[in-house]
Image (cartoon, rainbow, N blue to C red; front, side, top):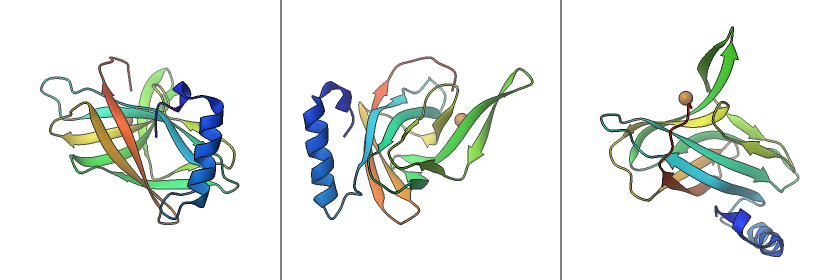
Length: 147
Ligand SMILES: [Cu+2]
């Protein structure tokens, strides 16, 4: 579901229509550029970033994230207070209708705790306020940016 930026635009449109007709997938929520930072030696926590776009006419609220290989995944937001970068935990993240939500360095992000090992990809399932499960495949990449 990620890497959509590499696809022609018509592919995206077709995919959205298909999702709208499917019974398992929530209509119109797309994830792009999903990546998790590879583990630093001696650490079992890391960060994840992804761009969600909501092509539906209803807001989508994410209330949780889960992965079999990760003990805890929290939603975080980095803000600058008096020149200091601080992270706070968010209980949910909303993607308004027809809008995108960018999880990126220096802003909202996923915080992964209790990560034992990471292979090339990691699947994270997001839960919405309406009880839908949205699986997103994250690519594990080596980058060194502040969370
Ligand atoms: Cu954080």
